[in-house]
Image 1 (cartoon, rainbow, N blue to C red):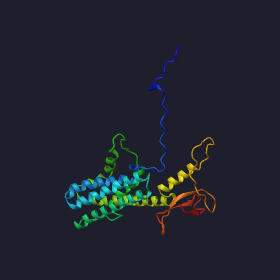
Image 2: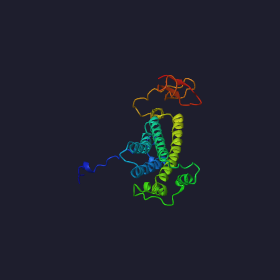
Image 3: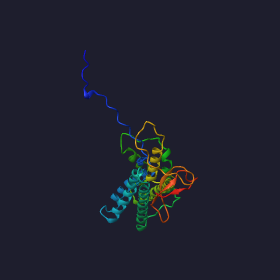
Image 4: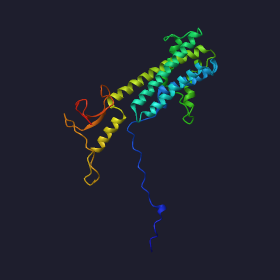
Length: 271
């Protein structure tokens, strides 16, 4: 009995390669406390303007754009984390600056209308801060994951006694407290990003180091492909070198070879 010819449509096809793990993670900004609180500030500012300001005024436009910038730049910076540490850091700083601008607008609103501003240690300010301090641990009423806006509504509900108040002063004061909290979180985030950049370098440096590790791995004797690119050895200790970028001095921004044993060895070589 003859074997029937093979049907190309039934031929097994090798499975596609699973995606390589990215060198640097990106995204995940929705889980950041800074982004969540910045979103709350943006929403509350939108409704504050709707109730207490002329939405067509220059002040209303500036306040809304500052609140939006605080939120959006945190998200954009998080996405840039995969390819540019400096861009991520710059965008988080923009978010911080935008919220500082919004803070001054709320302080001016209270001052110009002769409304009281809460003292930092007042009972009301402490009550607002207490909610933010226990949020990471409080999962007694988790939002419905099937509702993309559930977390947003749930967070607003925790501050509703102030943010939905009929009078402007409690809303503005609560928002001042929330902006201070978010700025504190962003200051910590910026410090962590700066420290990571100092210790680990930028994306191009990490990519060059990863490529160095790949190219200098033990080779299969049967592999007849092109030999690896020549990687210089450290003139001081003989270890492989990695591509670095000068951060300060007259040659800031220029690249050079630096010893992979740094900081134990500080050997360098020109490209």
